[in-house]
Image (tube, rainbow, N blue to C red; front, side):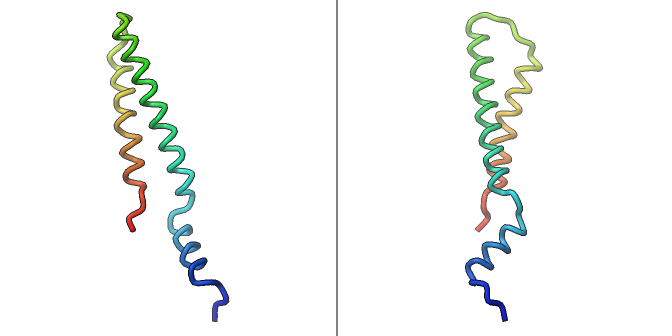
Length: 78
């Protein structure tokens, strides 16, 4: 006979199946924000007339696509 509250047991079981989910979501949000800010800065430099290497712009654009995608895939499936 378990003396643990059923709600607590359910919460602990969920946490054991996906550890550090909250930390991962915070990191995906921070990385997404950083990628979008970097892309905004790069686009403002292009608008200003500064030459940028295309591969740097593509890396920044890729980060703007990948990190929000990871955040979407990491959401609750309930």
